[in-house]
Length: 298
Image (cartoon, rainbow, N blue to C red; front, side, top):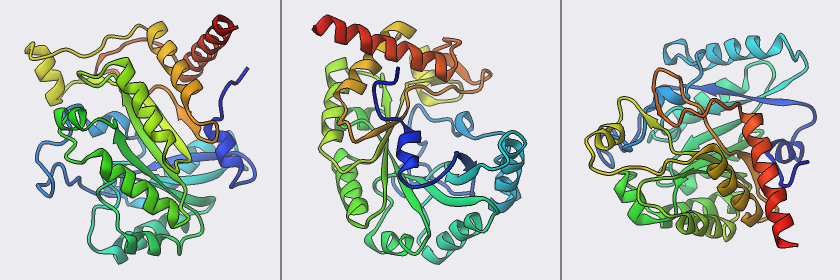
């Protein structure tokens, strides 16, 4: 039994039939890497951990989407697609005409019915949002990660929660659906602080949230810091994390859809956690925890 609104529920409000996101690497950089905001990037970030195998920037946007469409189309020939500009910061370019050309290239691919743009809350402007309204369907997903500025500073995000609040409200006022990305288990955060972030999300005009556990990845500054003993990170068991996610699902405003609770990085990059669970298996754990909590309350 499903106890919360999920991403398919959200998509059903906008599209008919089954929809699939196709990741795209459009060759963008990140202001937290190229010196615009900072250097070195977020301490936990290894971008290779979430880019699909078919995403190769050198192939171009249309070619990547065609490869993804071929992969999924064999099983679901009638499926529609959303081009997901995922890698790095996909509005980090002062040339808005260039940005729009990339987005339109994606929409010209057969079967692509909309785009989702992953970006930072400090990398949008009213002018860009106005231009995005020219597109048939677009959604923006902001990497907020936490509502606590001390945490954001600790992991070198180089933006604040007030940046997130401003970007979300501005995007919603432009009539564009808004998603928020959050990481649970960032260094130094308590469970009460994580749940406080959910309360702050509830106060914003957010359509979807994407949640996942902190993953310790090889090649990141965080992995080096933890190995050196400078600090440690929360070490959830699957059951502990499922219970936290159950509390989040029950606390989240009912109108907000939850896209996911976990993420899985490539085995060769992942240090922790190694739970060995598929997404649907973890979702089942969360639903069972929700049922337990409800029983305890009766």
